[in-house]
Image (cartoon, rainbow, N blue to C red):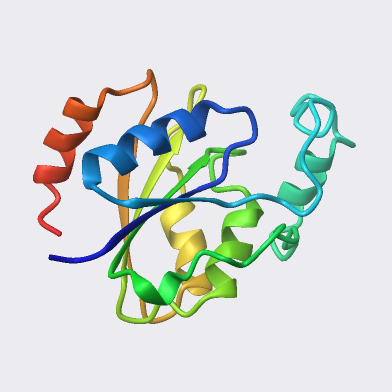
Amino acid sequence: MSKKLVAYFSASGVTAAAAKNLAEAAGADLYEIRPETPYTQADLNWQDKNARSTLEMQDKSFRPAMADKDAKAADYDVVFLGFPIWWYVAPTIINTFLEAYDFSGKTIVLFATSGGSGFGKTLENLKPSAPGAVLREGKLLNGRPSVSELKKWLDGLAL
């Protein structure tokens, strides 16, 4: 049986709730990807062209610093990687996370929360940040899916 990790970034708590249920459903460890400088409400105002999140997402090479690098990624075979969808892709801190560790030979299953869009080009945008890993587009976990619902999804993944 493979050892699993649910790693997630959550700016407002929505993705955190989904990640906690997923970790319980998968029997996985849980790790929060935290930015060195936490996001404020003003930073997350997508309607403000000068908001921190807007500026970061306009520069695909930008890598926000993480508060720590304690995920111990080498200990896991499967990593469920969660985030909110920002501008139709993962926030750039997800690239920071992927580039901070060696995920060669590991399976990374993406999950996300979104107020209205799907994964867009998330998978193709993240692949260069995790060379040697198998990245799989997972599921949007909107609406607070229950542990039992998530177990059904996991059973169908064949990991």
